Image 1 (tube, rainbow, N blue to C red):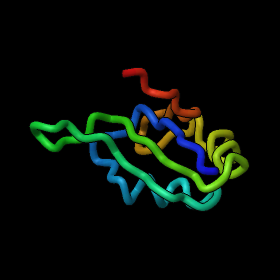
Image 2 (cartoon, rainbow, N blue to C red):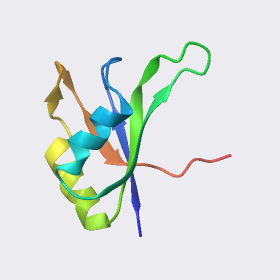
Image 3 (cartoon, one colour):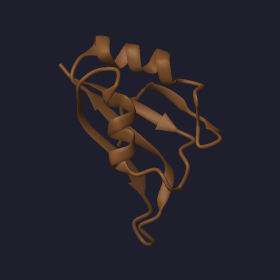
Image 4 (cartoon, rainbow, N blue to C red):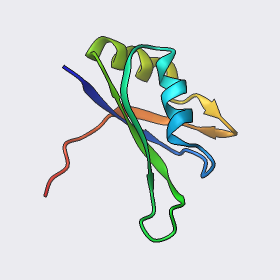
Length: 84
């Protein structure tokens, strides 16, 4: 079962490919997406990564939460279910 991870405090230059590469070092990534503004197409500074297993997700969270990337400290944790 895949596990969804929230990644916050990204620079506006971070792409979905960058996010995938960053997390792939810690396990199999099934999906990586930087959220973009729907009008401008510019990054909103956060994204989501889906890992193939919860073990890989926990390993990635432990390794990347608080890590400095491009001068910004990442916030990495399990994504919360979206209420509608």
